[in-house]
Amino acid sequence: MAYVFRRYFFAALAVVLVLVLVYAIYQLRYVAFIIAIAGLLAYFLAWPVEKLSRRWKRSTAVWTVFATFFIALLGLVGSFIPIISIQVQQLVLTIPDMLRRLEESSMGWSWQILPGREVVVSDYYTGMMDEIEARIPEIMGNMLDFTQSFVSGTATVIAALLIIPLLALYLLLDSQRLRSALTRCF
Image 1 (cartoon, rainbow, N blue to C red):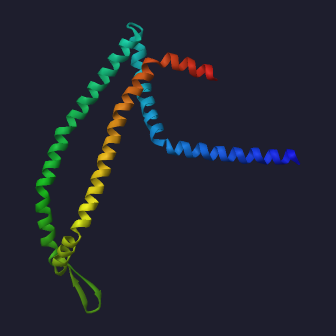
Image 2 (image 1 turned 90 degrees about the vertical axis):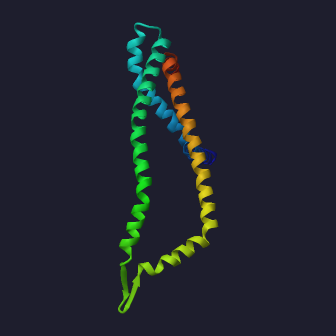
Image 3 (image 1 turned 45 degrees about the horizontal axis):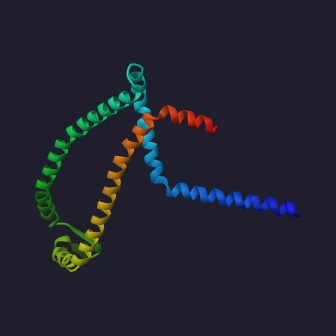
């Protein structure tokens, strides 16, 4: 009897531990994502580091490859910024014209809901404007919430963009010690 109880107890304990582990992994998914990206970056930069470390000290090879990679990355991103800036400026300039054309083209829009009952879109413009004006405090509150979440998200992304290269640098500099420590664990 005690053996059966102990067996069910350990089975239930194993299920609970697995559930706790899954929950912990779920809670740490962002950290795991950052570590995975840093690991991939270190993996892709490891080959040139290994080639250069045959001639130079490993730390010099790592810093050289790392600096070259980030200069190339900044050059690539920098080449897209003017294109994106021009596109955004053109969009901002054409939005009023697009809205005016939408209003002009929707003046004749009408839907027949029921036989003999027709809804004309232009009849509802003033009602929509009144509704928007009445909801301005709610809209402003939503905009504030959006701004707060945007700033929070931006700070998170900036932190990740700082942590990922540092972690990749650490993985590249200490890859031999990490590899031997990992093999000793197994």
